[in-house]
Length: 317
Ligand code: FO1
Picture 1: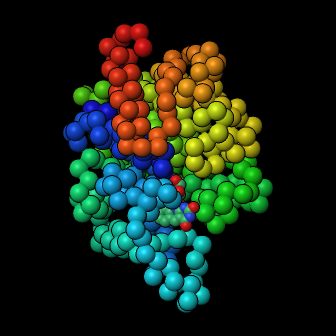
Picture 2: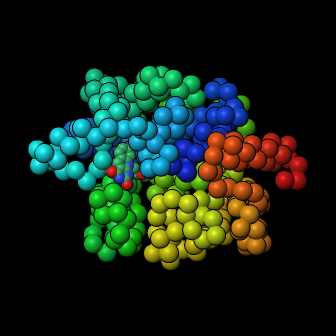
């Protein structure tokens, strides 16, 4: 069993590659829920939906989030009614939020609602929320504390970040699916997807017990760097690293994950950073990490799985 930790688009792409390589019983994908919020009365879980739409093959590849061939009648109606329209909810996407909201109101957990949504879309691989309890990412900025989507979408990540917090995390717990995967005797490896380490992966690692478990696990843990040549493929990772005074490079990612992983996978353009990654007490693997096509996604997943098998066997990676 391979346990993947994922956030938004970068996570979804590697998850798709892993799902192409592994049958459902050999893959569990734990997804960040720190971005979740209630908007127009709808329970919205952007990262869960991004991973789900990508695995279902109905994602909008251009935007990264939402559904392909979307229509926008609901947004037009909201606008006409003078309601907030800064967060784009397509008509097809609305059906997901409506169903999740209804199931949660009926007493389902987020894990149960997610499983039903995945079933509806024919997604066979397990996508599980990091927790069934609410955790809200709060972005502290020069303009004050902002709720995650206020920072990310409404303010377009413009305010300079001074700190990031996860409201409710100390009272949350890993979801049953996540807890089960961590305790699974058949667990073979942990893969940290190339998602934003501070916004997407950190909420997962901040759940009670998770960081300690990762530190003491007996199976290999591999992360794929989301930075290529000091830039993020998508999103504000590089900008936030710089604002927080962190090293905006693959070596900076290695420092961030120090003690938690055995190996960092970096892109070919970052080959020169290998010694500085190894100086953080981990291995480095160099390959093409930019995933533009299904073939790229499966190739990177294959490399990561081979690496995990070699590390698990105790061989030189
Ligand atoms: N991201 C945007 O930049 N603008 C949007 O209007 C927007 C709408 C949206 C609707 C549903 C959904 O599942 C995701 C959506 N996202 C949007 C993406 C999302 O807010 C962020 O990408 C993630 O939270 C960060 O991983």
